Length: 61
Image (tube, rainbow, N blue to C red; front, side, top):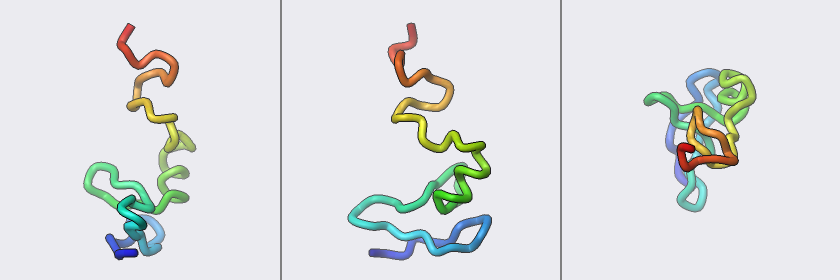
């Protein structure tokens, strides 16, 4: 486990665990999952589809 930084909102330590960021990097800022979900209106998990794209139709049609 490697310390990456601290949440921009609450200051919680954010780590890299097993090669994966245990937090969210958005616009150059680092957030813990809880603060990002609150700031993002609960839309942090979009099922793998990019923002603004439907999880059901990602082919642009």
